[in-house]
Amino acid sequence: MYVRVHPSDNVAIVADPEGMDAREHIPQSHKITLRDLAAGEAVVRYGHAIGYLNRALPRGSWVREEFLEMPAAPPLDELPLATSPPPDPEPLTGFTFEGYRNPDGSVGTRNLLGIAATVQCVAPTIDYAVERLRREVLPRYPNVDGVVSVTHSYGCGVAIDAPGAAVPIRTLKHIALHANLGADPLLVSLGCEKLQPAKLLGPQLPVLGEDHVIRLQDHRGFADIVSVVMEAAEKRLAVLDRRRRASCPAADLVVGLQCGGSDAFSGVTCNPAVGFAADLLVRAGATVMFSEVTEVRDAIHLLTPRCANEEVARALVREMRWYDEYLARGEADRSANTTPGNKRGGLANIVEKALGSVAKAGGSAIRAVASHGEKVTAKGLVFAATPASDFICGTQQLASMNLHVFTTGEGSPYGLAMVPVVKVSSRTALAEKWPDLIDLDAGRIATGGATIEETGWNLFRFLLETASGRRTWAERWGLANALSPFNPGPVT
Ligand code: CA
Image (tube, rainbow, N blue to C red):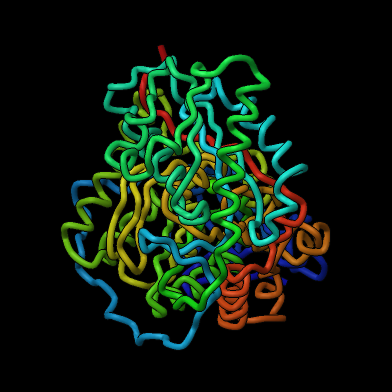
């Protein structure tokens, strides 16, 4: 049994190796030729060439990765710009979730106390205080969902005024002011670091007030430092504990999409189902972000026509060009993206991976483009530029999102402390192997047991429930990957 996506495809994905009319054993999720193919001929999947054969292959053959030569990336200077933006979709009304409305207008899906670091130097001290707060203080504030260490590897030993430094600084600023922290963090500074509180928060610092900032070098001894942090934290906990969830329109959701550990099924099961849910969210007025520059680069010619206007399309091209140049400085290109796991899962190269990856973005018009770490304010479908690395993409999307969707084929226990991460599997086998890590199985789409539409609606409803407080598997286990801000600037 196999899955063919587009009528012009000359290969298909093996869904079940049993009973196949194949010339050799082809593992699940790998490609089989549907007719005799000549050397030099294009291998077509999703209706697009994913590579050119360096040898002839008869019908029923396994298309191994090394048989394919990768096409060049689409040139950036001759792309169609906003030539066919999809029409405004029919609004979807009446869908709500129970969220925490913040004074700045943002809406939280969780009610967390965040203790944010300006610099890595203070991270273990924050961790120490957070551990005690969870044990000794949090039980007295039952309406608060948790206390989170908002710590990271940045803040000093860097060229803080170099152009690249703007990326991690704005990422960390927006994370510190995150909707799920009540947009009101407690900030811990060392005192001598390059990323001073005023540099991190800018004009936002006076709004928060100096009582939100603790400088460790102002205090005498570790015991004093810890008690100062804990006292300030308890004051914040008392305020957060008085908050209650209230009904909010689905339009208040800011959903970050990404994939990790993708396989050849990702592009036919979980990613199209996520794309269907993304279109529903857009119709409901929400913000949906897709990201991962190296995974859209090879499909960019399919995306620039979908931009709402030429300005958005040019911003999309700008982000592709910036990343091409960033990779070139490191003597790499987008082909460095694919992992051994992707290849084991049947993805031959980044072209095939990208064509499957952009299915997450659904079919809506692209309304806006955000550069690395910028806060997304537009509604509708937005491209928020990030690296594809799971933990860096997730960190950067945290600048804006209050809910995260993560699709996976090979499987990852990925989670974040500050937002719920809903994990969707590409294969039923993965959902069965990891029933206590995968939140939703999209694999039945490949076997005919479910449709993209049904699975997309299920995910949409699941997201509203999760935003309202239903805990994901990653939250139940307390799985939280470290914040990893993208720093394209120099380290000193
Ligand atoms: Ca990723």
